[in-house]
Length: 141
Image (cartoon, helix red, strand yellow):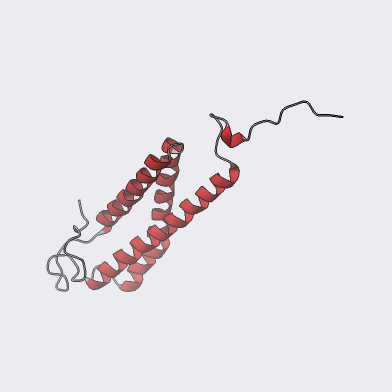
């Protein structure tokens, strides 16, 4: 018996089709890992700045806050930014990639600015650690 029905086109070739499940899964894992890495790197930068400038109650209290509250909160906000940009620009690869980079860096900079301790301390006369590069603006609003 001969099958006369033509084979349907692949779902990713249809103009209105969504991305295949494997691509969506990979994109989700990439967003999860990248958000975790950015949150951890931001917490490490804040912790180092707080330690250098002798800010906060103690290093144990600062690291407890960063580990148990800041990193999970930052990870959640970054992941929500990842999902929002993907939902808005998912079909346009170049604007999607540029918008992701801008959104994730903006969220990271805002988090740094929110928690950056600007007052001058004896260890940091200008409120900026000595190791902070001069060509990078100091976080703050």
